Length: 318
Image (cartoon, rainbow, N blue to C red; front, side, top):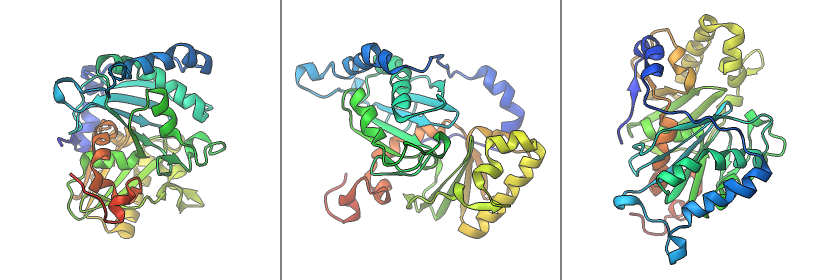
């Protein structure tokens, strides 16, 4: 899979110009209400993906190309696009603000409305979701950016897939999805995302390791990574002080993980101004969408427990 990797200097220098020249279109969509989603958006989504079902068949990708609806759930924004099996975007990336407060029902309603133009343009054959919290077996166990209350053991993936016509769906942590788009598959690779909070993911020789929510680990004066280098902390402390904090965290992670490579993503990665170590690189924020293709590579996801037959060494994998 092709990855988009940039160095920090280029990211900072070209951030304004890149935003102006970017081909990505951002959809302006108001969060859907339950009633609106049920009356229009929900039925429209099912109609889009069930056109083939009327003939007794599942949706078929155009020109034989796998079409995956990739969704990146963030504490600030929700993003979606249609990608192929290699992570290449087949549509523009659409984005809307994350509703606040946000219940599981509100999130599903908003996502259903967000993806309508994508379903009409390229009917997907499956769905991939990156979620900012602990995810196991396609269920949300924690959602720190949404308040956690009402978010324990929530079958979010199934709820969304049902609204979109019953497509196959897989969901893991959003930093892990981003990692799948950028890792090289050799040695210990660690992913740190800098956005609303701080996301982390760990890979060994290209295989996803069990998820550790390091963002909740105390790092300074009883503050966890989220409170120390998250976006709210950056705005309060200022970019200069925030950069010093991120530099400190990189040193801590180097000692804690002993990674061979550290990949830094997320919307605030472009705000880094200090010189990074040789084994640290900044990557495109689009990786949160592109990595969704790898959720359908069974061996890569062995440790997510979404495919127990892989962990149990039974079954045949292509």
